[in-house]
Image 1 (cartoon, rainbow, N blue to C red):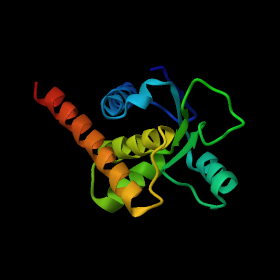
Image 2 (image 1 turned 135 degrees about the vertical axis):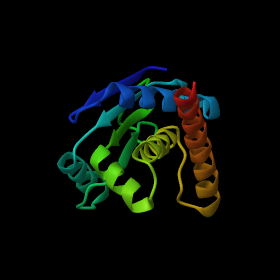
Image 3 (image 1 turned 30 degrees about the horizontal axis):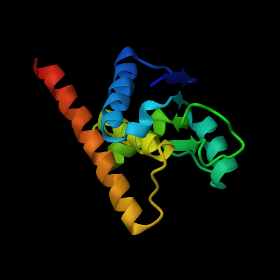
Length: 150
């Protein structure tokens, strides 16, 4: 799977590794993710503009996914683009009382699942999506802990 990481905000080597690890784990649970995806890190203003244009909400959000399967006009071998806003993700982590890296993994996993066609509109779809999302988060976090311990 080709993963293209673009950024308009700083990206540390640790964060790049976390992105790659999350994508690798997600591929184990969702084979469709073997196709390419672009992951774009943006600031709050850019995310607010994207959210306003695509969803009509004039506020920044943690993650937005543009799944090309849903966009019939876009012909691409890749599944889509995932926009992440690290500043919003850090703020959410504080509000939820979790570590910023765990919330980053969760937001990325959420975006990856949307790119692969998962949705949470209905109760059944939401249960399925969030179950896989949390499996990914827990697996990546376990891997991170084993790196720290070893």
